Amino acid sequence: MKAMLEVFGANVTTSSSGVDALKPFASQSFDVVVTDLRMKGMDGVELIEKSGGQSDSNSLPWYRAGRKRAS
Image (tube, rainbow, N blue to C red; front, side, top):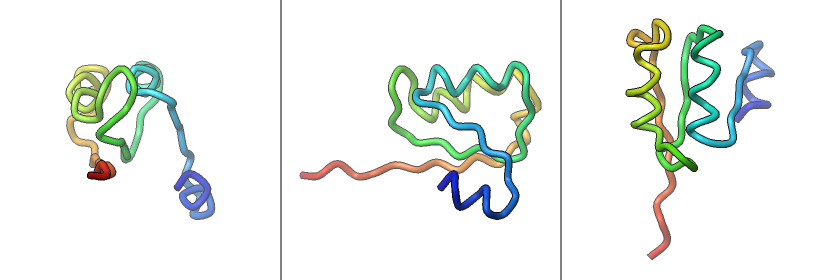
């Protein structure tokens, strides 16, 4: 997904965990956030909640992604 967005001119910031994903909100602004629901350390819903006070993220469009677990 990162490569596809960059082809269209987007600046993309990636993180390997929910905790790491929260850090850039302190120093960067974002036009859109794409997050997985299941991440190490913090899930996507918690990331959305915790980032709300760190920037103007209350008005950000959020897109959540997740995979179903195999039965």
